[in-house]
Length: 105
Image 1 (cartoon, rainbow, N blue to C red):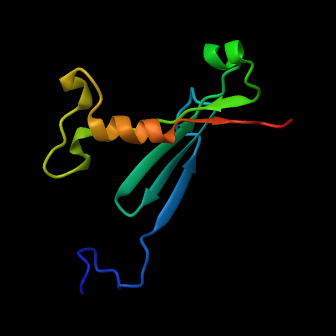
Image 2 (cartoon, rainbow, N blue to C red):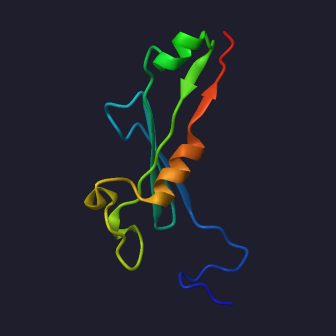
């Protein structure tokens, strides 16, 4: 089977990492795999959600979210905001990525 970009079946796409691409994040990276690009960013904040404090849960809190730009797919993906809310797939994946995590010193 011939790939559209000319790679052999066992050949991976070129991988590149560019650090610190989001100036206001605590840390960030632009990951490029061929024509696929992903920005990963981290923000560090002091504190935990109120429910953790109220219930005496020790540890830290980690949350993650993602969004795909409208031109990331063919046909064009409508923006989630045009519906007034995140689409179901985005909501389910974001919910599955949210995790409470215990940090031990």
